[in-house]
Structures are given as structure tokens and as C-alpha cells.
Image 1 (cartoon, helix red, strand yellow):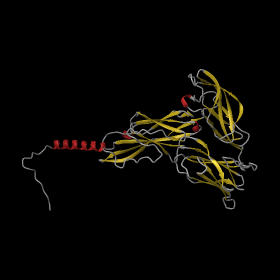
Image 2 (spheres, rainbow, N blue to C red):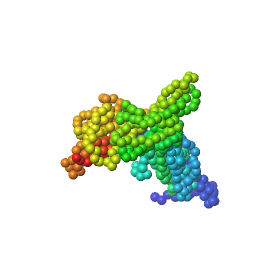
Image 3 (cartoon, helix red, strand yellow):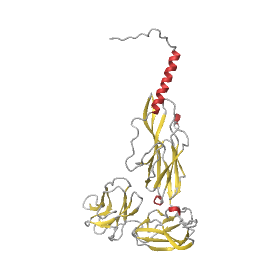
Image 4 (cartoon, rainbow, N blue to C red):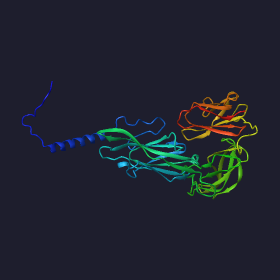
Length: 439
């Protein structure tokens, strides 16, 4: 049935211009309502263990990725994105010493014209240790933020970090808001060890700031040397003030010690030196600041020890190690008749670092525990494939933990060293590799 309608008696016809004006007002009203509504299917909450969100602006709690920690800074620097302008990020400075701070900044890609308009709901900062590959989420910030200060620590020395920023938002097209993310360019920062010689690494020790040392590179041969740097723990406030008379280096073959002094005393004006070794091995090095502390009106002779840096020394030229074998100890598994040395370093959620305790299970298999000897954390084994075409030894490891673990495997016969790392807050993935040649 065809339906028709007539204007009611007494209705006056509106002028076409009035009708267009009314329609325009209605469209603007609807647009304002839509922009005020939350985006349907808004970005999901972050997975447990990453940054939590609270309110708007969404300020992340401090989180660590490697040795990095992030602090959001409000205030957008500039607008971008409109009429083809790129959504860009910048880095300042491009190089910092370990323990230093750098800033990642970005422009605001939102703009408010009708078709093509873009609204930002939040920003996500991603990071990686390479310019390609899988970037990891570092933190999510509210839309009022335009920069983040990122602070390094001693463990970052010698590393390069790469970042980009993703705006999570929506674009208005043909009368609809459509979810859309935009990514900036990739920016990078190089973290230096500060270099040998005097000065340049900053002060520390005041108000609880740790006395740290860092070494770069952390793996050398007997024909090379590494640069060890540290901060200056002296400070001049009265009660609790500390003066450095000289520095002395100490080293051991286990992170738990014992440590022995080596080299000559180093003057208080220096915060760096070179380190090398004629003997292959893994060495744990700390810096002892010898001086005096002012307390309750009295100067007392004392010393302070830095954090521990690990240095691996391989035989120059590699290969042909002459049949050296592993010696079992509290922190070392010696597998396959003592040929393979396996150790495990860890860092937990409170940033505590240490070495896992090793327990042999069979001649080719063992496990590590960290917090309790009743709680197995990592199982490791060596498998021989010498009778197969690959003709190598394979290393396998599995774990029941999500803290940071670095497995260190040394083929003592051929002086081949490999590391296998599981990141903090990530389920332990199976490690499987076979770089160790037969026989």
C-alpha cells in the first residue's frame, strides 16, 4: 500500500535557506555528540605486568625495560598531521652516558576539521634494541602528553635503543568515526660507558643514588681490552659527606666472590680505566672507593663498593682451546664430562641481580634455583648430535619463571661462548641452539 502525507492545516512552508541552516545546525550538534562519546571498542587494557592506567591523563607508574625507566612529561610541543604533515618523534640528545637521561618528544597529530579529522585517545611508546624486528610496549600515556624522559642505568652501557610512538585514536570519514593508529618515525639513542680517563661519568652516592660501574664491551679476547667506568661517589654535604682518596679495582670468578685487588691504585680524579686479561674466563669486577666519611662531627676512614660488572674474555682468534675443562662450583653446571660450563644470571622485579645456584642432575643435565632450593627455576642440558649430519652439540633449556634470566654457556674446548636471555615479565621460552662443533 502506498502511503502519502499532507501538510497539516495551517502549516507554513519554510524557505529553502532556512531548511539548509537548520540541517547544518543539526549536523554540527550530532558531530559534537559523537566526538564526546567514547570510541567503541576502545584500546584494551594492557596485559598484566605492563603499565597500568588510571584516570586521564593516564600517568604510568615507573617501569623498567632493560635498565630503562620512563617518566611522562605533559605539554605538547607542536601540532602535526593536518594536510599531510607527518607525525614525527625526535630524540635529544642522541648519546648519553650510562646513568644519563634522554627525551623522546612527539607532535600532536589530532586536528578538528570535519571529513578526515583525527582524535587521539592515548600514546604508546615502543622500544627495541634493533631498528627492525619486534618492538615492545614501553608505556601508554594520556593524550595530553607530548614527551617522555627516559633514564638509563649502568647495565645499559654500550647499548643502542630504538623508539617510536604510536597514537591510538580515530579518524572521521564519511560521517563515521573509525579506529586508526598512527606511528612516528623511529628514533635512537646510544648509551656510552663514559670513556676511560678522568671525569665525565657524573656523581652518585648522594641521597641513596647507587655507586655503579659499567664495562664496555663486556666480551673481549685476550688480545683486546675493555673500558671500565664508574660514577664519583663523593659528595660535600656535612653529615654523611664522603671524600674519595683513591679507587682500587677488585675481581673474582664468581659474582658472589671472593674478590681480590688487582692493578694499581687509581687517583680520585679518575672515573675510568682499561681492563684486559691474558687468561680466558669470566670475571666479575667492582670498584672500591677508599676515602673517609663525615658523621657526627668526625671524619672516619671507610670505603664504598660499586655495583659489579661482568667481563668475558675469550682466547684470541677463537677455537682450539687445548682441552680445558669446567670446574663445578655453587653457580656452575659442568656438563658432558666437564666440557660445557653453564651459568645463569638473574634480575627480579625489585631489580635485585644475582647468580642462580647450580645443581647437577646427570652428567649431561642440571638445574638452577634462585629463591629456594626447593623451587626449580631453570633446567638445562647438552645433547650430542655428533653421529648426525649436523655434527654438533645442542644446548636446551626450559624455565618455570618470568623474571629476567641470562644463561651463559661456554664450550671450554673451543672457547666458544653463547648467551640466551629471557626478558623480565616474559614467560620463559624454550632455548634450543646447536653452535658447538664436534668432536
